Length: 39
Image (cartoon, rainbow, N blue to C red):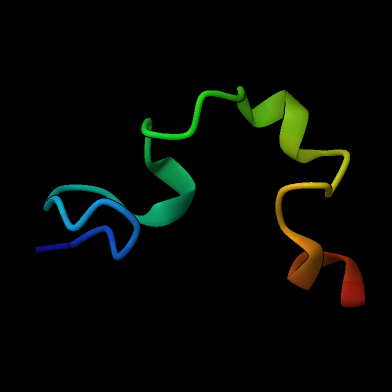
């Protein structure tokens, strides 16, 4: 079973966590996940 390390609830991962208010569309800017911009 997957456990989200962001909210510690089972059934999903951080990328699927709904606790963050932004849509996935906002993530495309990379402001939320600077670690992804290193690519």
